[in-house]
Structure formats: structure tokens, C-alpha cells
Image 1 (spheres, helix red, strand yellow):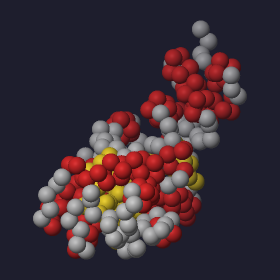
Image 2 (cartoon, helix red, strand yellow):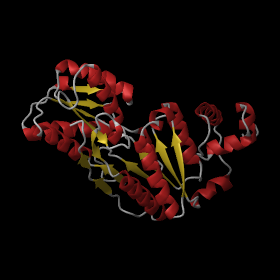
Image 3 (cartoon, rainbow, N blue to C red):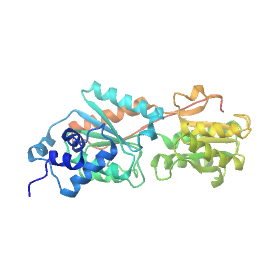
Image 4 (tube, rainbow, N blue to C red):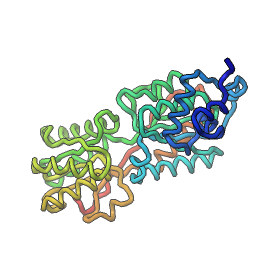
Amino acid sequence: MKPLTQKKIAEIAGVSQPTVSRILSGGAGVDEDVRERVMEIVNQNGYQPHAMARGLRTHRSDTLCLAVRRGRKGFAKDPFYAELILAVMDTAAQNGYHLSVCSSRTAGGERLFYDALFRSNRVDGLIILESLEHDERIERLREHRFPFVLVGRYDNSPDLFTVNNDNVGGMRTLVRYLFERGRRKIGFINGLPDLTVCQDRLLGYRKGLEDVGLAYDPALVCEADFGEPGGRRAAQRMLKESPDAIIALDDIIGLGALAAVKQSGRRVPEDVALAGFNDSLFCPHTEPSLTSMRLNVQELGRQAAEMLIARTKDSTLAPRQVLIPCEIVERGST
């Protein structure tokens, strides 16, 4: 039986040979359905790149990749991602690197992306976001000894290169800030519970309550899907408990909470104070303007990119964990 070639894969999948080549090298700009169809053919037939191509893995591509777990719709409306991508891209360019950005909307698509990544030599290193409590991506990258930097936290593991916001400390500060302004029934709208960022901000919320002597009340904690509609639905549930303050996991969820509070006939901040997290560009322009915990996203992206570039140049570097502080920006909603 003749060995499978990229040309034959293209014929079977009904796509062009350059498209197959782009998918196998981990390149961006390919429809996720096409990527999954091609990789299914590859995996079923045990295709392996030519030995010469495999040997190129020792050479540099001068390209970094930032991999986003959410699909395109999940991050397109969140300015945090735009700011982070620009920071990474600028730092990469200053050091002579290109940046590729990839996203997967399904778990299967994500696995296929990493299969292609390990086969190729088109990317020197990877920056990943939104770690899970048990993250298959991180375990596979470790197994293949592929250079990567995590923006976030993973099981407090000392053998990883990570750059993270002070999510616990920032949330503790927000709770204390609201308490000092007379709020005694402070609710929290969280995100998906298996994401470490959500776990850390919930931990910070609970520690903040302990700091000021308030009891933790599970009825004052709601989980929300990411996005404004999810925040609005969660706030509608929480308002049945009559909180006098609400902290949202992020500003997009906070927008939905702001709409829900207004629709209920309550006043912001007189009846319910409201605070977000991330200090997104729109926060000064809501009505009232949204108090938020400002992240230094520029520094987050810069340090992640510089750390990854250093890793690609020296595989003997000792792992580092960098924690970047954040600060409250007070506005009309509190």
C-alpha cells in the first residue's frame, strides 16, 4: 500500500493541498469543520510527515502561537482578549517573532489542533489561556515537552511557566472596599466552576468576607455563562435574595447584571452597588459608569511573551510563576 500523501489527503477531504499543509503545520485561518475532517483522515490512516520535515523540528520558525479556548464568538466581544493579543503581538514583533492566534469551539477541534501542533515545526512555542482544574492541553504539552507559557494558574504547579493576575487578592480587595462603604449583603456572580480563574476569584470573595467578618451565604453566589445575557440571568436570580452589592466575575457579566438591576426597578448604586473585574474599555461609558478591578493586561501579555521567547531560546531555564497586581478603579456604580 502506497504511503498517504498530503495530496491524497486533500482529495479524500475535498480540499486543496495547501489547506492540508496549513492544517498539519498548525496554521490559522482554516474553518474548524475542515480542520476536523482533515485530521480525522490523518488519524485514521496513521499519516506521518516525511522524515526530512520531521527533522526541521530542530529549526526555528520565529513564530509564537496564542491559543484561546473559547470559540470566536466567545471572545470577539470581550476587549480583554484584544488588549492581550496586541500586547503579545507587539512584544513578539519587538523580538523578531510573528504571532499566530488560534481558537477552538469544540473539545474535538482542540485535540486536533494539538495533534497538528506536535506534528509541525511552524510554531516555536505556545501561550495558552483559561486553564481548567484538570487540563488535557497542559498535560499533553508537558508530555511532548513543548515550550509553553500559561496565562493563569494550574494546580499551583511549580514546574510550569505562568503569568497570572492576582485574582484572589483583587477579589478580596473588592469585598473589603464595598464593606467599607456600608454594604453588608454582598453577592458574587461567578463563571464556569471548572475554570481556575473562576475558582480563584470565588476563593478571593470568600476570603474577603472572612476579612470583614461577614458569613458566606451560598444563596448570594450564582454561576453565569460568559457574556452579557448570562450575567443578566444570574443577577435576576440573585436579586431575589435582596443583595445590597454585587460583584461580577468580569465586566461583560457585570453589564448584564447592571441591566437586570435597572429592570428590577432598583437604583445603582443607591439600592445595589455593582463592581466588575478587568476594567474594560467600556466601563467609563455605562450608566452609571462601572467600578472595576483594573488588570495590567499590557504587562500580562508582555511578560508572557518574553517568558515564552526566553524558553524557546534556552530549554534549561528554571520555571517561573509571575503574579501581576491589580487595582480598583472607582466609578459611579459604587
